[in-house]
Length: 452
Image (cartoon, rainbow, N blue to C red; front, side, top):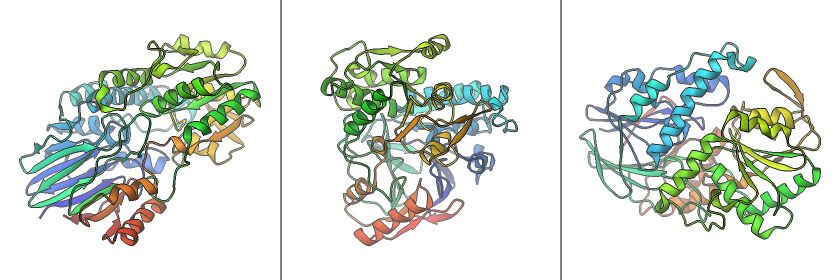
């Protein structure tokens, strides 16, 4: 009998790992890092239910760190099998994992900038990433492939980020579907999620299972930027390098053509990683909606645009005066170049900070959203005098209505296990599946095993 053990993203939003046992084979669906508060990050040190050298393969749904970031640790500890993903996910993983290794080792070497002086050693380094990438095998959508000799797997578009997919697994006469992270319907850049097929079990993300996104994110961004411009100071937008930065740039390009309030607002992108991801949208044009571009030399046709790649170019932003936008990672302000810009902007009453996505507990972004009066960056206690705006509408995750719409495409009633969500949102999704659709549904608990 085939079984699923919920190793990660069960009771948390990060650390996605689901271990399949089929006959005498073990397969991981996703292999992500736990992120956020110390107690959650410490789960990265907990041994897997089986030794890495006994895992036969990994099937990856998409390139985000919380779904791929543990792979080099797995390889370092003895995993030798193949890692499957879609074609755009392979270069995304390379960008994400190289950045993760660099960040872990750099922060550790510098004593975590005085904020985490007793941090754990890095989980892996650049050599482990190189070994990991050599194991990657790409498979397109709707193309069945064999995993470990006991599973027939097929990817379908999940609509979350470039290359994201949910995966259908046929094994021992049963069918299990893993959603990965599900995207939203009617987004400007991403195609809608593909319909579900029949299944016995559905392991489904629930990040926003208890809420609905605002209806017009682009208009909300326009209002936020106009108000921020009127304050006269810098406008800092923390944004994830993968997908969120591209969504923001695409939205700004549209607003510049339609909203005179921000038509000539200078836009600065200070994110080398995001620049690499921008290029992937050109490399894989059939994996996203067509993008009108009036200025081919800039991403998505953004006007008054300046790219900052080197450290010296980033430092040039410190000399600017007057209203301007700087977009920089990370999206939860948990690290990266954006900390330098926030260090400068947060005590400034003329400045604005525009947050555009989920803020995990324990991150600087979470503190800002929840009204902190002071925060600590680089060891300095900073008063919050800047205007902080939280725009929920740019999330790349399906909300409650999107999840309901997607689940309703299933031709039967699989047993749903809610994962990748806080307790309230996971419980809300399970209740939705049960009450609205008549499905058997449970909230997955980390460390538990269920039969397929």
